[in-house]
Amino acid sequence: MGALSEAAQPLTPPEASELRDLFYSIESLSALGNGQTRHIANFTLDGLKIQITQTHTAEESLISVVAFIGYLPFSIQSMERRFAVLRIISDISAKLFVKFELDNAGRVFARGTYIKDVNNAPDFIFYPLIMFLQESRPFINLLGEYVST
Image (cartoon, rainbow, N blue to C red; front, top):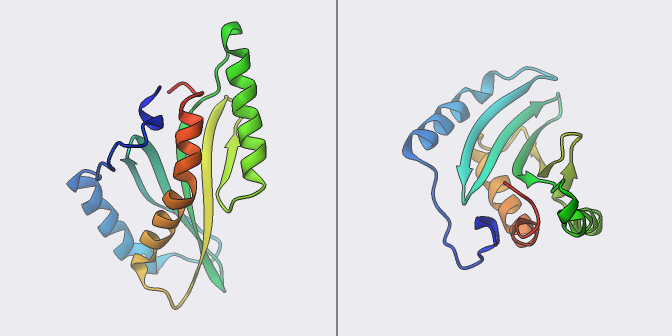
């Protein structure tokens, strides 16, 4: 079993420098113009590489949280694992707010997009991050048994 599939493992916090960079990124979000996408943060949390971006429109902002889970197995010996990953992704993505995706390079991602209206505080990104982790974590643990990192 991979590191992602161990349910009893406690969350590991981001490094202090990652939190400092995230704080300074939050402070500068007020200058984001219409239709622009801004990268907010890249960090590793509990073994997952997480990226947060914000896209601003006239009415609202969209916070996107993306986690890289691993690679789809490609060897001949791993055909059953590959089909299991594809079946899990297709079954759970239709039922959740967080969507699990597979790109052309065989990378498995979890993506959640959350609406932030103009009245929310700049640190609103922590709420979507927590919601993303709460909803996706059990399925990331399940997928962690099948993907390669």
